[in-house]
Amino acid sequence: MEQRIATITRTTKETDITATINLDGSGKSNIDTGIGFFDHMLDGFARHGLFDLELTCKGDLHVDSHHTIEDCGIVLGEAIKKAVGDKKAIKRYGNFILPMDETLILCAIDLSGRPYFVSDVQYTVPKIGELDTEMINDFFYAISYSAAMNLHFKQLAGVNNHHIAEGSFKAFAKALDMATMHEERLGEAVWSTKGVL
Image (cartoon, rainbow, N blue to C red; front, side):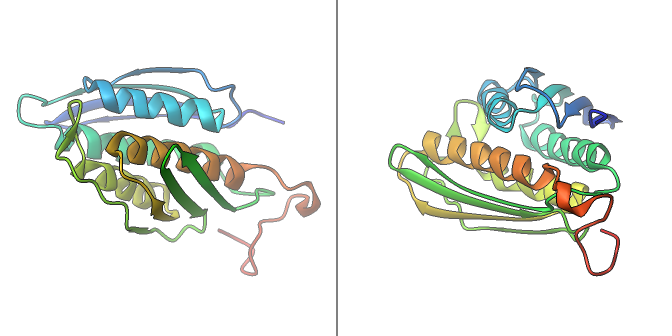
């Protein structure tokens, strides 16, 4: 089976981003966004989804973190969509409930081609390190729309903001890994009554 790898570059007046993802990797990452905690979250995403991820971003952090984080979501979503390709013989759906100490996060994905994002994840501090917590849901929203995926998060428990954020990134990784896995019984078919996704 060919490895599913995609590279996306996006340059605007606010950010310059290049991302390469290998959906059939081993969890290696090389990430530099200029925001240490965000890099840590993306490393956890790659490691726990067994994706190889390279992502560099030069953003206008002298303004704030908004453009960097949202645009990284756009680029990563586009890379995921390109790497998944025609979606033949993939499971399409993925879900995972991830425990992290007192925190419990549910993530569910449908690679339907129809973008939608729902999250009730709540943060009680404005920042974790240099990451603006209000941008975490914006990051996942950007992924859902640029990857054309249905993406849901439910916070079932959690007090520690670090655990809530990390649990969300890791749950997303595990659910995406499941959704992109091959289902041999499908042969070359797409898992849809429409015949396309």
